[in-house]
Length: 277
Ligand SMILES: NC(=O)c1ccc[n+]([C@@H]2O[C@H](COP(=O)([O-])OP(=O)(O)OC[C@H]3O[C@@H](n4cnc5c(N)ncnc54)[C@H](O)[C@@H]3O)[C@@H](O)[C@H]2O)c1
Image (cartoon, rainbow, N blue to C red; front, side):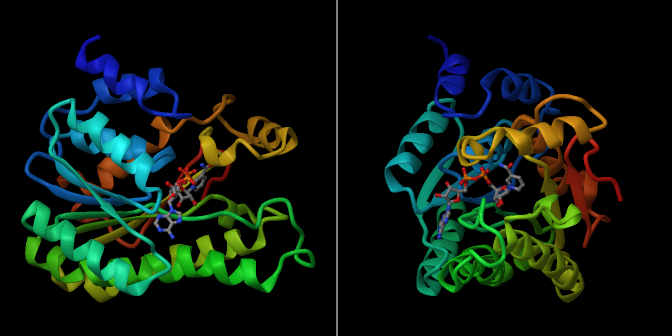
């Protein structure tokens, strides 16, 4: 088996065929010399982003709390020849966030990019009454507080880079008000709002802060989603097909690259036209 095939064997629920096609289309050297930290990189979208970022020529640190899966993912990506490090991270623990950011900077010799991708859903399928306070707090701690803490922990290194780029993962659920997902939707609204505010706070440091808001994408985390919700997306998209992880990668690469140095504070829905704004 050649390196390319090894690549696509190790992606879990991420569709390998569309990801390979996307990776073949990445302009050579798009992120050459960049040093990027991706959170939530052990599986799903974060894993797909990691493969694309490596293919674009960057060195990277993959961070996640799923240690075994993260190690496995790191070994597979390293086998393609990429410079890849793995760092265990629990976004709920402020000390762990600080440690992970510092270790990432040390391993890579600085940081040019941060992809705040890690998040939990947890509140899916429950209405506003059934949602517990504990779940609300968990979702906010990871998705909102974690994004703030990680951005803050990486700020110094991104500023030193002179071309720092933060890419936050929001969600189109916050744009159309998906029901029965309240804590998650509220958390992603907050991520979008933080994207606007941090873009203004750190623009003077040469750091761009943007968000990508995917629609319902086929990965492990969405396997629980009822067919009716999938159908709603299928019926509502301008492009009438399922969304794959590969569909989201181009926007993340763009936001990390020199192609977007005057784009900041923006939230880009990537959802086949399900929500337009
Ligand atoms: N899949 C979709 O349909 C979809 C749609 C819109 C937005 N998103 C967003 O994209 C991002 C990736 O989602 P995904 O679908 O790949 O989900 P996922 O659950 O597969 O990936 C999230 C990753 O974050 C990690 N993580 C969770 N809590 C953590 C913590 N406390 N510390 C460190 N790591 C932690 C998980 O272990 C996992 O590897 C999320 O921000 C999600 O909200 C996904």
